[in-house]
Image (cartoon, rainbow, N blue to C red; front, side):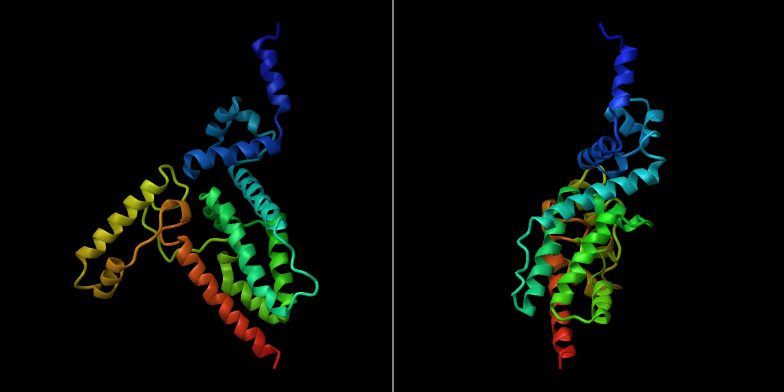
Amino acid sequence: MTSPRAAGTASRSALTRARVLESAVDLADRDGLGSLTMRSLARELGIEAMSLYHHVANKEDLLDGVVDVVAAEIQDAVGRLEAVADDAPESSWKPALRRQILTARTVLLRHPWASTVLESRTSFSLHVVRYYDSLIGLMRRGGFSYDLVHHAMHALGSRALGFSQELFEPDGATAGSAGGGSAKEGAADAATALLAQMADELPHMVEMLAEVGHEGAGSTLGWCDDQTEFEFGLDLILDGLDRLAEREKH
């Protein structure tokens, strides 16, 4: 009969960095990014918190790792897309780039907290860099100079990875926070109510907010980053890049 101490030792020895990171992603998916601590992750894995430090150096290393997991998922999803044929016309860059970026967004919608972590990283994930390289390759196929590609990547910004950076976001409205959609909706309602009290000072903003609406939490990664808003901004940039690419050729 195996003793509890021996069973615990066997469990720790079977633990890998990959398993730790996968469990961290599952925990953030279920309970929000705010729930992801070294202590809660250890509890999720059924180990002592100190045992985690054999696999992740600290909380920042953990966050770098979960970004890698999500970025690998994006790269895998993009890799399953139908490749652009060698004899495809130059104009095929645009639908291919759009499809790839929307595929990345589909992955982020499964992990709505991940955009917040992606924004905060100061180190590069190799999977993210490879993904960016594939975007550059599509634009080069479309006849873009490297100078225009460089401008395009800056213009796309976070949209290249499938999410829009918010101009501002009410407290508690961050995607992936504990409470999910209800927290975002409550924060947005509170912000709208506050603006309504300032209707005399902010007439145009109050009128705009009275007319526009956003989609449900299933297609939203931020306070204003729903699918319609994301595709509107993406198409605006891609249409502009298309015109600039044509201008370069003449």
